Image (tube, rainbow, N blue to C red; front, side, top):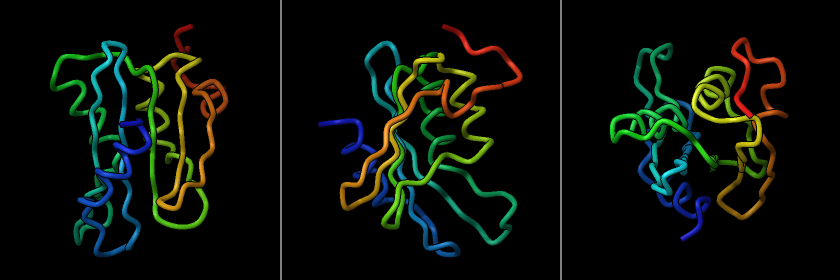
Length: 127
């Protein structure tokens, strides 16, 4: 199963009663293991969990520390870019060449790298 498919599958479990924007993420660690996450909303709109953050937290919890590739599947007809906080989290555990795939449930896909998403991260991205 592809990384995008894993993110699509995880997306079904997102909890998004306020925004109605279900998001699923999958990160593939350099070990080859894949971790998934979903967005989780609550009434305190300032304290939501992004899907990317949930997937990265799962990766860290199981002992992996480096992202080889990430996929984010969101609601809507156009792929969305990770928010600034999630781009920073991806950069913390990725490299300049880490591939980030942004997709929709219907199959629209955009591919980029962390170098393109976070060209001037405050911590120098690893090669």
